[in-house]
Image 1 (cartoon, one colour):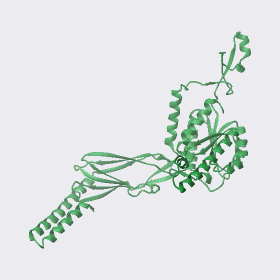
Image 2 (cartoon, helix red, strand yellow):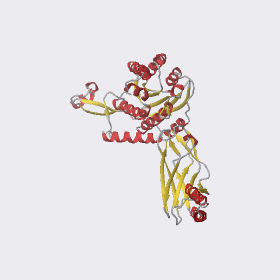
Image 3 (cartoon, one colour):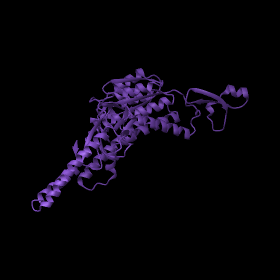
Image 4 (spheres, helix red, strand yellow):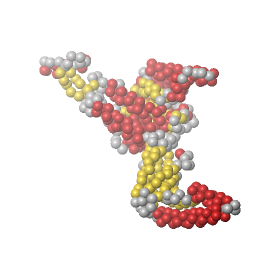
Length: 438
């Protein structure tokens, strides 16, 4: 049992009346009477709450897999099967990772009714999250006393995985885009692929280099070979887990953004019939998922990404190149998630990247610091702001120089904010497939 504020206010008022009764005795009688009535009302309310509490139920519904960096819905249902209207305060014991100690909701629940309370949680770390009990402080309209009830004695554990929500959203977006553009049918490419489609009549504007002379001689009309985009190409995500990926943005590290993006990208590629694989590296290759096109392959990639951890090592691009050269057979799209902070770090590893770009289509992801961009937009007023603006301008100029250097050597570059990484990476993949660059 817990006494509420109204009880103490009423009790204090009764004591004040009793004290004033020293001056005038009738006031003391009123004070004593009010205290007696307060005690009687408190006992009556407690008995009523005790009876109603036996018919009060509460349960929590949350997915066993939560998505990293997304708003995950949580629903708490409270059922009042008693004949009394109750004034309730719900406290949900959230996992320790959220560092939330005063999470609660106050509401009134009528007799023989139920209510669903919905809220969302945004986890910023992968791993196991343990929910505690559901605590309900129940009272009536008197507001003198309340009783604490506990539901769900055992901890409720959920796992926070890379963003499954973003993965589904991107797949849906791609399907809608292809349907809107009429790309559900075969897309014919000329001199873009090795997969033969059919022989058709030559039309003005077609590439004359694809003329089929044997068919032309046989039909006495110009005939042309057409080709379709290869149905199964190889897409490999290369994720840098070194210290360069530890920078935080909006609660998540660059590594977490890269993991969410690679999951969505590989899922889209797998659904489109491509073979997908994964490599994680720092000072060496520590994660290997060979490319495959089986439907169950995505579950394996999800579990591997769930276990990825950042390290304090420097990235070794030489070791990455040696592994790619030996193990990644055939021309593939390599999506490299890394972070070049200085021109010197790029120049040191540029020869290796050029070697990889000769054999494969290499795409390097570069992160744009939105806070630095904001510094450049705002005109400096104070001396400190002028210093910050100068430093931000120099950093941004270095990033532009790094991107230009990579493009000059035939390496594709995605410059994006961490928040827009997933959408931009999927868009780049679709662009590569559409233009036949792979």
